[in-house]
Image (cartoon, rainbow, N blue to C red; front, side, top):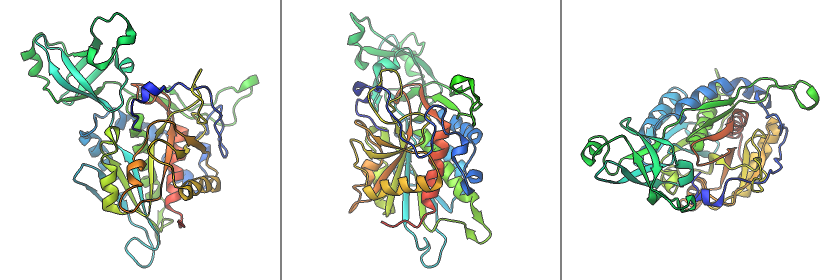
Length: 411
């Protein structure tokens, strides 16, 4: 999710009321939310956790998504019919529809977009003592960055600190610097150059493993709550996880008679430079000319203490976007997502985001226009070094995406 000064708008919200079609607001929907053929086809929470760890710990600020792209390519090889990289570095993985007539079958071309890049910093100046000055790549809060370690592409680690301030209210990026342990400009320049990018250096942590917990009154829960994880760059590596998991589910549903479901051609686009203005997805949409597009990205929540009012909760299923600053979702696409979720018994909740946007904002104005919507993953502390998601929401989102891909869509 790109958020223009999103930290200034605040991500703390008064607790909201998540609305679902079968989710459990208190405990999370868990693996039990996915039923029928999708239950065996969609990767398990354990598989999703392993994939998420690999993707979020990869290095990939906007415009430098190479490591992430290579990881995704390896995950999808053998699961799609073709895979290629375009001029701007977007990775496009296509599963052809199966049916009579055109190579894409009788269905539509659906574009699914999830961005690979993450927010970060870029070096703008190196002083005589070897300290690095920097600018932001994407919507970055100086308060979230303070005291963090950052990692450059070559493995160099630095610590972010600030000049003497009369008040912390005066903290801004131009008063901050990165200490890489160098004692001089020459020593620093031997390791880092002006124009080099860095990202926060953090590993994924499991906050809650999926296990049965006592409910209020001491009764044991009927199902295990979902795992919850904290990591940097869940925006939007978790969207990439959802897209990969959906592609894997479609591949697993293939039977000896051909693809057991999708009449549609599905183009999974892992886009570049979303955090600096959704710059990769627009050209990809222009090339693909989709009939329908779905972005998969994170959204904020309204379920933390004294939070801003927002009717999205962690653990209540994926959210179906109605509106954000970049997009008013096409009503037929929104209705399609809600109808498929209800049909499959998947939890979902409506989302109106008052700030920020996604790749769908660039896609829906491509060429003569593309009916577009968004499957959103509820995420606490967006654009911080420790974003938090519920893997039950992630698995349900993958199931919803795979189910939509298998439908004979009427636009």
